[in-house]
Image 1 (cartoon, rainbow, N blue to C red):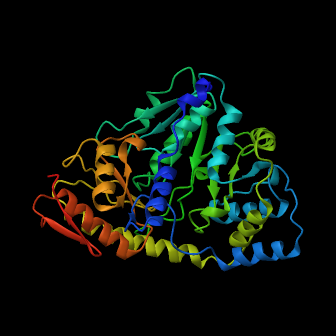
Image 2: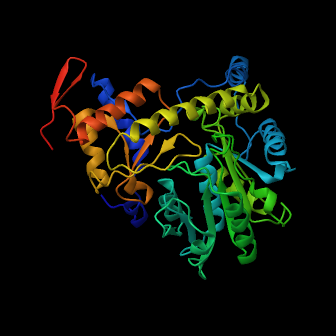
Image 3: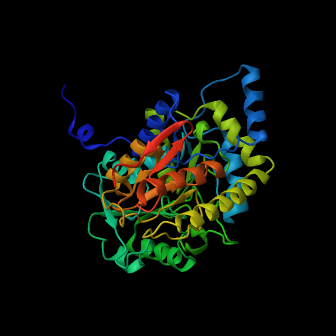
Amino acid sequence: MSLSQLARSIKESPTLKLNETAALLRDKGEPVIHLGGGEPKSKAPIDAVVNCATQLNSGDIKYAPADGLPAMKKAVIRYTEEHYRKIVGPDNIVVSSGAKQAIMNVLYAILDPKDEVIFPAPYWVSYPEMVKLAGGVPVIVTPEDGTFHPTVREIADMIGSYTKAIIINSPNNPCGVLYSKDFIAEIVRLCEAKNLYLIMDDLYNRLVFDGRTAPNAFEFATEDINRSKLVIVQGVSKMYAMTGFRVGWAIANPELAEAMGNIQSHQTSGPATPSQWAAVGALNGVQYSIETLRITLENNRNVMLERLRAFAGVKVTKPDGTFYCFPDFSAYEKDSNKLARLLLDKVRVVTVPGKEFGMEGYLRLSYCGTIKDTMEGLERMKWALDPNSPNELYLGERRLVRDWL
């Protein structure tokens, strides 16, 4: 079969593939623990469910405008004013089928062939493939000091004649690092000075720990929103635990927003109407579910950190937010794909190889599941990797003997 060069160059999403693998193993009765996922266990807010159900019960489910329902845009406007302290209008907003599509729309709208998009490592697994899908070239900045904090100078040094945009994800998936206020301020100023688009992937910015808050890029922008190349991407998937509804949005200047809406109109049309009404319910409803989720995640993070620090040789940076921890397991195995496969095959623990995020030797571990799964999953991992652990382990009634160390 003949496929396009583009199709041959794009890899499947490793995180979605792992979700599929875990589901298949569970269906076979395997005692799988999924520490690789990015999906909270909590339920969608009741206001989202009721608003969606009301629309469904009416039976009046029709097409939505390509760039989003007026009610959805109104909810985004109110949310942006409250949480970003920025007044935007309907012509600044494009509602999409998830934040992923919102980013994809931006890239389609701004990139010409060979245009470059810069982002720091570790990065979300989809960024390189998304840039390539839009005809661009991903340019990765790996911090020279071995931390997860790039400097603005390191990013600036990668800017060339083909650079079109910079993507910043803070707090960061996979490592949970929250970039500092000074860093965000300097990146905003750099992009304005170089006339570059700055795409702020803010999907986790309400899920921040230890009393901290995520910097607001709008605070540092000097250009008017209607001329600015600053783009804010948000969605309901993470902060409201509404992953299956697939609703996200982008805030951009009207010219870019119109182009994104036009592109989306030929891709998928408007996002599903019931999903948008659910998102409206979440955004306009009681907001305690976000804080409840945030507190749960902070507690889970603390448990995971405590357990990881019992692994000899593992280096771990304390996450400032998100669902994720990104420890360095290279003391056990430098090939993260090989390590992830060993943990899945031998002790049925799903992790995500660090190579997929641009940093070899690491694993992304998620703490958005239950405390029980977190503790048991890490116990299995330690047994699989630590030669000083007992030689036998029981998974239920199954007796395992470690014969690979």
